[in-house]
Image (cartoon, rainbow, N blue to C red; front, side, top):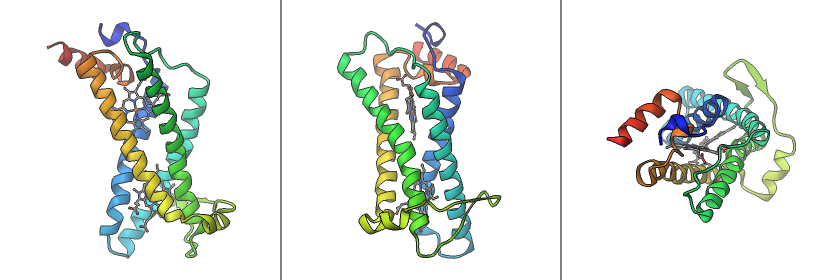
Length: 194
Ligand code: HEM
Ligand code: HEM
């Protein structure tokens, strides 16, 4: 079967998936690099950028979740064992929880910071502090929470990408193709047939 004969995700789902996936990967790399950027203007610039992209991911993830709750995903291949279908579903739920939880933890962390550095989205729009974040910081170290949550999301995304590639190259079904933009899907489909 080729990508074109099986049910595919809609354009909206694909755009949101790849936009959020690419920015999350960029954000984890950027976050990891903070330790290597000396304190000063450059570091300040990149932290502001990180915060702006992070809040954008939060807003886009809410849009994506709302979209998902009002639309059905295309059915998984009938050849997939029930346990694997359940595992995929649980994995996707975790990804949604973390896509929203990680930026929320970052927002809480900067809101609770005694430095009170304002968050100005892309240097244009002030973003408020999270109400109650100061109290939350008394119960849990929000810096640690943000770091652990972000790297956990990274690990989940690696497992998720590995599963998608396994579908394409080992199970040889259309699970990867149906999330791909049409042009990539036909190239990948042809490459697999060779
Ligand atoms: C999906 C979204 C996000 C991802 C994947 C992400 C990822 C990361 C990672 C990996 C680190 C480094 C952690 C460490 O090694 O200690 C980090 C640090 C940080 N993040 Fe995020 N983050 C996200 C959203 C946000 C948001 C929304 C904010 C604030 C509005 C934020 C603020 C920060 C700050 C201030 C730091 C610490 C910089 C420092 O070392 O001083 N992040 N983030
Ligand atoms: C941080 C990165 C990523 C996140 C947060 C993410 C998140 C998600 C989520 C939540 C879904 C479920 C969609 C739904 O039905 O609502 C999904 C589906 C999918 N993702 Fe990702 N993804 C990421 C990266 C990737 C990568 C790198 C690949 C490919 C190598 C990939 C391939 C797929 C495929 C093929 C599906 C469809 C699965 C199916 O039909 O059941 N994703 N992704």
